[in-house]
Length: 216
Image 1 (tube, rainbow, N blue to C red):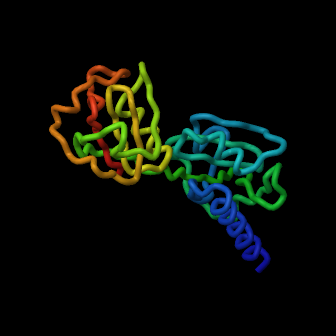
Image 2 (image 1 turned 45 degrees about the horizontal axis):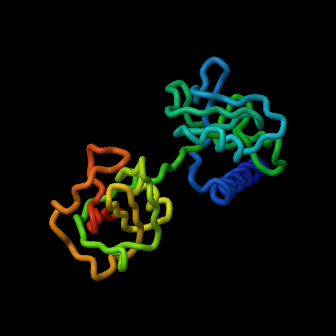
Image 3 (image 1 turned 90 degrees about the vertical axis):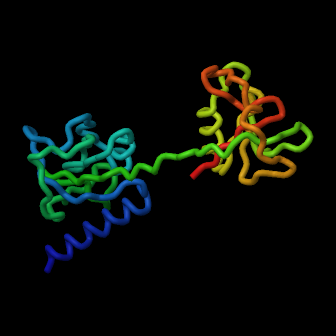
């Protein structure tokens, strides 16, 4: 009964940690590990005297998997090595050196987490639209880059702001919005004919013509 209570408490703590502090990572369970056959092998951060699950996850941010072991050792990788298999979660029973109420793997047992990468942002061209300085077709946010404007940089700028539409104009201007405002209407594609200042191989709208993309 005592062992069941211990296991239940361990799982509850791990679940709370992942949910409350590290929502972009999901626990994959406890895996066997050894010095000669590590489950995660790309990089590591070892023997940390004041360590937590959050620190390990932050260290492994560019990898698919993070794993914490023996309370103080962190490992990262993009695959779980073949010699490591899922074992009882009760084996991951060592308290983190930096957090007194959280378990950080165990002796020769690594608690592994999978990073839930957000889906890529996809932009679709909806065409060339009329525009004017007195009544912008999309207008909520904007910036100008005399030398480095590209469609991709404008889209990235608008995506960071959470906008639905991105538009490039006059080779150097970027606009963002969640609405296409009147009197802007679709225009001939030939009007969006100015090379981007940051990439002359692609066009960035035209004079009083804005090339609009919609995020999905």
